[in-house]
Amino acid sequence: MNSPLVIDYYSDILCVWAWIAQRRIEELRQEWGERIELRHHYLDVFGDTATKMSQQWQDRGGYNGFGQHVIESAAPYENAIVNTEIWRDARPATSANAHLILKAADLAYSPEESAAFALSLRRGFFIDNMDIGLLSVLMSLADGAGLDVDRLNNYIENGQAMAALLKDYQAAQKLALKGSPVWVMNSGRQTLFGNVGFRILNANIREILDHPASEVSWC
Image (cartoon, rainbow, N blue to C red; front, side):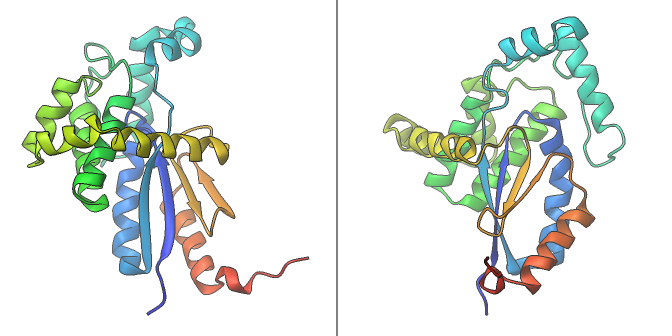
């Protein structure tokens, strides 16, 4: 059996477009199974939400205006449920704490379990309106997901989780990724950004699998 096609998937846990894209991830898994390998990475879009709101949304309603934007963005997608109070009461100061714990889960368990926990965090924020910028909330959600909090803390305390997170952030900068989510395929030759539909993703994957990199002609 040939090696699976690696898709490096970069997102910010607080990004509504990554929440919307979750359904497409599930569809791709159903379509391609073991022929693709989705590797989850994180980038810094909501690393400092207070500054983001003051610089980009100050004249458009601030947090409340951004919350309405999130609701309207997700409205056409029935699988991307968004709480009507999003960004009103719960205002995560940063996505970095969530990303850090997800990298700890990656190290302590497996990429698959970390990805499943990432979905739990997104549900906690977008559906249940929880402040997933708070470490106490994140650890409570980890415990509820069956993850050993002490085991996670060990990787945070020894710096390995932070090193893994910075590796993601630095890779995103090197690739000049400006937003979330981003799909990087074919050893970096193809990058798809933002609200990319399933048909486009599927067509790109099919093209790469039918014409592997080894067949690329160079001038």
